[in-house]
Length: 435
Image (cartoon, rainbow, N blue to C red):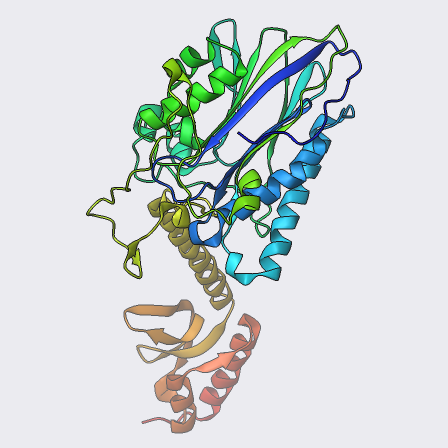
């Protein structure tokens, strides 16, 4: 836990105030901490960096540095302030990527709780979480922006199955400076005795609601935060773990605000010169103050990809800026139906036009008027007999008979009838023609 450097300030009397603690640990597997957290009198926030080699620690610490500016008595527009800070964090990450292309692919989740003395204004992007523990009951306030959450919403898997799903780390929204991720924004009213928990998925991914409630039911914020981190590691979390716990207490008496707490990558980047990067967590259960030593990650044999000779860090494949492809067969079917519909419309329009065309031709030695086109497709006739005349081919000259057999195109039915009248007049004068 980072030691505060700012001096306490005295706040004006407010209906409620926060007593808070924050702990962040690299965990037993990760080589560095990509979580960042901040807890202050007016602001609680957790950011979980995504990107692996693309430096998720920079994304999370950058976001926290922008968000921590909210830690002052807020205006009435809590959600406007939270949304603005999240967008500024998003823009700042984009600026860093522009300055250093090697950071392309970095991003971070963000869960922000801005306090005004009576309620919280929450902003949320990604899969870090906020919980409310009240009167012995725990409630998840945020909703994960993840692939497995979409499967839960569709009823395809349960929450327990989501915890072991092979794609449980795939998030659909994050602050990356490129894709504009609209955050979830909402208020929650508070009462004295409430306890707030913000945590990264290193904790929520392995501890269910019952276990979280059990830990939150005991001790002060500092004790609860440490125990949540310890329990997450003991439950087998393979990720960084960050937990912020804040108690809502009566604020009728003016008090000095406790100094803010900065943890995780945001606090550690200043100390990157240290050679050892083991777990920073030191517990206090039963007097235990020994450092938890990291253990080697176990990579499943069926991991299908690698970079150089090292298995791919799941963090490098964690963020998916576009939603997963679901119901692919249905989308293809709909696309096919649309194409068929357009083709049918085009064919119907062509057929309607063809039925307004006429030509003069021959049928069984008699001159007739056809409606349609003077052409045929294999197995398809594009015309039909419209009107039979008494003009006989045999009584026409060879030239006129040949023209009729080839078909005399007419722009309209009237034009076709005039062509027949012309042939009839020739028939009556050329009585010896033909044979």
